[in-house]
Amino acid sequence: MKCTRCREKAVVALPSHTAGFCPPCYLLFVERQVQKAIKDKKLFSFDDRIIIALSGGKDSLALAWQLKKLGYDIAGLHIDLAIPQSSPIARDHVERFCRAYDINLSVLEMEKLGLSIPEVRKKIKRPVCSLCGKIKRYYFNKFALDNGFNVLATGHNLDDEVARLFSNVLSWESAHLGDQGPLLPEENGFTRKVKPLYRLSEFETANFCFIAEIDYGFAPCPYSGGASFTYYKTLFDELEHKQPGRKLSFYEGFLKRGRKAFTRLDLEEGVKPSPCKSCGYPTSEESCGVCRIKHMLEQS
Amino acid sequence: MQITVQPENKIRDITRVSSVLGLLNRLGLKTTQALVIRDNQLLTPDQPIFKDDRIIVRKVASRG
Image 1: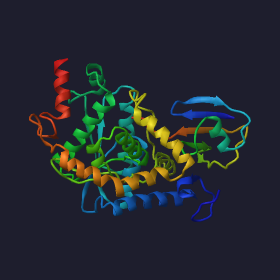
Image 2: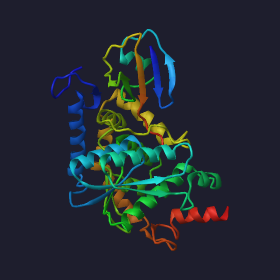
Image 3: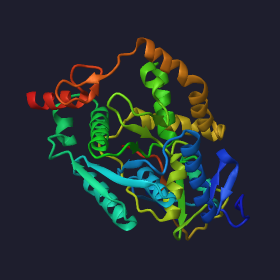
Image 4: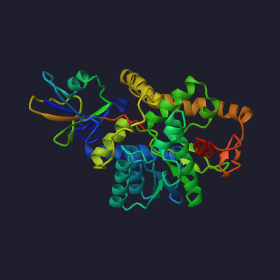
């Protein structure tokens, strides 16, 4: 197979774009996809202070690498979840990456905050992925606001977004459908959240990391077995195989034609967030999700 | 040929496949579900593979 752009030998084949790329042209392809996402969705500018949530996996490190190369004002934030089998490895990847690419890094240790994920899992009988997600979102947002960052960027890719959209459609979660997308503007105590990799699949970010020689962690979280999103990703891989490009057209189609209706519905029927009575974090309940988790840990 | 499947790091001995596409089919993977690496080089599905090759198949789906 030859590179679609320069006719050298291709190393990545992308059926969704009916294209193949050699290493230099592939790096250019990814850069253009990220630039298109930033420009089309008005995600941020060179004047913004961007904090990137760095897990140590391929997507977040690829995002940091690309935004650094493009010259944006970025810093990294890693949340150490204190999971013995995976957290030290993830943190090591992030720390080495940030040293190598001269990216300012902050680390929040959940154990010091009384929220180590193994403890949360042991004491609260609810799906741990949901609790962990809640805790991470809370601290990413809080850190950004407390430290003068006006944009929080995450490495969510097309597969993540399509799996989430599918999950929300299956249960017709109108509030979640109304605010799903690559840009969530700053409002009600939430910082602006952006997903510049939303046009790139996991396959594309994995190839990107390999070619850019980004050393990422690919060991799965030991608690993620049976997660429904993993199953939805497999379903959509089958569909994409039969109909290349379907994932991106499904997601872009939702953003163009579906999302507005749910946003309107949520405005009419949804609950406007108010500050948590304990910590001030925006919530639709009296106490926010993280304060409720802390309370449950104290009671157990 | 010796195949290392990541992230499980399972080593499999696979015979009678002559292309990357054939290898992925044998492993039950679609072409966009894994990187196929030989001698630190990425391989596209149309590439031939040989019986003495040592190949890494790195699945791309992130879990958690």
